[in-house]
Amino acid sequence: MCGIVGYVGARVATPLLVEGLKRLEYRGYDSAGIAVMNGKGVETRKAAGKISQLESVVLSSPVHGTLGIAHTRWATHGAPTTCNAHPHHSCDDAIAVVHNGIIENASTLRKLLEDRGHEFRSETDTEVLAHLIEEHFDGSLETAVIDALRHVEGTYGIAVVSSRDPNKIVAARKGSPLLIGLGDGEHFVASDVSAILAHTRQVIYLDDGDVAVLCRDGYRILDVNAASQIDRQVSRIDWDLDMIERGGFAHFMLKEIFEQPASVENTMRGRLLAEEGTAKLGGLNMTADDLLHIENIVITACGTSWHSALIAEHMIEECARVPVEVEYASEFRYRNPIVSDRTLCIVISQSGETADTLAAMREAQQRGARAIGIVNVVGSTIARESDGGVYIHAGPEIGVASTKAFTSQVMALAMFTLKLARLRSLSVLQGRNIVQAMHQLPQQIQQILDGAPIIERIADEFKEATNFLYLGRGYNFPAALEGALKLKEISYIHAEGYPAAEMKHGPIALIDENMPVVFIAPHDSVFDKICSNIQEVKARGGRVIALTSRDEPALAGLLDYEIRIPETIDMFTPVLASVPLQLLAYYIAVKRGANVDQPRNLAKSVTVE
Image (cartoon, rainbow, N blue to C red; front, side, top):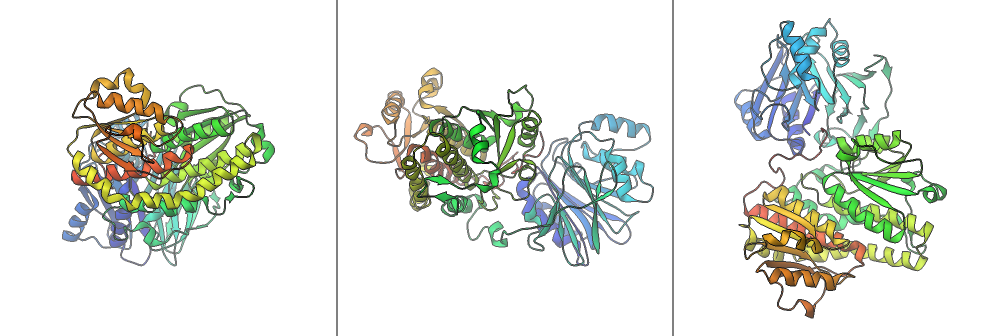
């Protein structure tokens, strides 16, 4: 949550900071602000609302300087107001701080600081940091930051400037992502590479406990505990700038939906061994013996990633015959899970920074389990701290509602399943059939996208609906959950996903002529059962939208609307089914006037509890 960007160099800072905030707006858009060293002191501009509001403020009241920090906020402590917007200042306005994370002992620290004469101006936990750094300042900004952070409990990614030590930015990280960008006579700090990709491809990902000091002519990284200098590896970013632009699409979400033939192909590229009927995943860092040593698997994730985990549970248990548990990361980390050195923990996170998922991984590792990550962002914390893993190579996903990352996660998990199953009981012929089906998926997804106008017309019929029910069985139950989540996230229509047979145990009471019901009904192993469920809905006047894969006499007269998807093997139906459900949610949201890329109350990367 929240976005941070900072710049020190020879160029005018304000345009760079505002540009960076625009690229980070998917991380939070409740309010925004900048603080720039103007040669005399720290000058700040803030605004409630989206970055465009801040941009108007800056245009009407410019701020000049070549060093500054900026922030776009997703509110946690305090309402999304101008007063609560970052940056926050010390009493004398000499220190400005931007912060992502939560200071858990903020109330205690605030009381202590107020007792020492500090006056607070906001409701935020972040303002505590500004006053705490002021309390410890004795000439060196980095020393004051280090001393202040020793009193802090919680998570943070921060950037700090001070007119009393005016030629540097000090940044620090604990539990919230932060990186520094290296340039020629200039340096950047950001919570995401997208903010600085237009200016540098050389970055250093900070680890927990790192404190970075950025000046025009260089940088240093210190250990917050020892205050001693340390080295960190420089990484090169391979993403192109046009990958984080809309490219002619009305929204990032629509662009990313239409990128799925390519993103799914990229996830599989070079990893499938057709003749052997298996997959090559060198990043797992696991030998065949290691994989055979596994007795059980725990998959932990949040949100959309949790839905991909549910699909993986079906795949792994069916193909590899290894017991799998799927856990919400937020629950796993706070109970007493049963794991051992024969447990494999798979953690799934698009950003690789999801706070609950990262904590769950660390908990599993502490208990002796091996942990592998399924992540999109190279160099992310989960990628660095896991014992191995698979990059999904979906490319940057800017839309808050995940689309292409979901389908790529499922493909990465399918390749892991294939590799594990071939070592155990899956025959080479079965493996080849799975590989063949995987190779067909990009073209099949494109077929669905070519039919987008049909889905848009259906959306027009249901844009005024107030409730939706999504039903599926087997592999398609998680796809139903994901379809419902997409609609909720971006259109604000109440929607629920259920196993189709569970409809009779409660949800059927909701069905009447005003209730749209989406069935995922391909010709698969449970098709006859889903037909019975459709009949139950029609008998109660429900309006049925069905995803089908062929002409089915059994469905004649039962469907109000039909969306056709190509046929594939059961385990990949959720990949194909998710695409029209993404489009349906997108078109309904647009027709309702919603901002699909920045849905209310949501942000892309959840880096706080």
